[in-house]
Image (tube, rainbow over all chains, first blue to last red; front, side, top):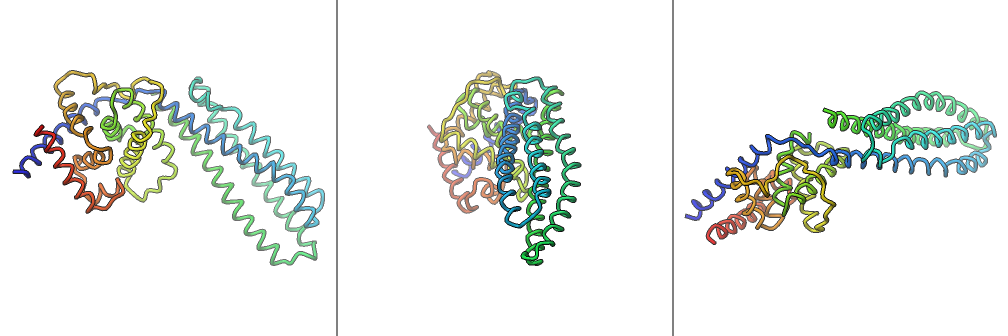
Length: 194
Length: 149
């Protein structure tokens, strides 16, 4: 008897759930604000990451001076490195300052789309600048270190390989993250425009 | 992804809400959590399982906090709380039954109604399959009592 009641009750609930699903099938998501809020979260996250990166670079400048001084590296290489870090800092600020979270929530979608594309493009351009720089920098740095008799070769190689791998992975991750986030924002806008 | 699973998400939100505004709040919250979590979704489980899990966790979490946002427009062009047609009456009956259960039990019974196995339910709600069986037995008893009232 219990089994019968259970089955009847639950069978009825299943039928009711099927009705609900049928009703929902006919509906579409119409809330633009919902999508905009999600978009705003993405922009905020992107800006937060850029801020963290900016702070790390800002702290990296005096740190670089100290380390380079300790290693006995030339002032030219030190200046070259600091110049790059300063350019990276400016790039970071200018790239992410174009699109504000508030704009994603209330702004014109076309503008948001253009700005998201600009961020994406800026990072691609930055890659074209930073890779040649890093090749020159690495060669120069290794050359200067090899001139320092007090630093063992093994230490140079180990430090260089570890630093290169860690730095490279962080860089690739950052680049992919920004590209992916910008793509997600663009997809979201396209969906809203359909 | 959202479009494909909107029914699942909306059904969960509906069963955890008290009115239309709350459904929309929850729906919004779930979508944001899905969007935020998508990056960290590693594909270890099926996408459906992950969506159920995020939906339930969001709704149960909100149930605890009872956090409300300012009213926003409908997230779907439907008002299951106020429509009066026959189908909506049936849906309301389902809602009344499920909504009288505890939040965690609501999740289990909804998944069971979706014809999921105990193992699948267990994977979504984070308990053992055996525990799912025990809880479902109690839920059935509770539902039976409701209909006798």
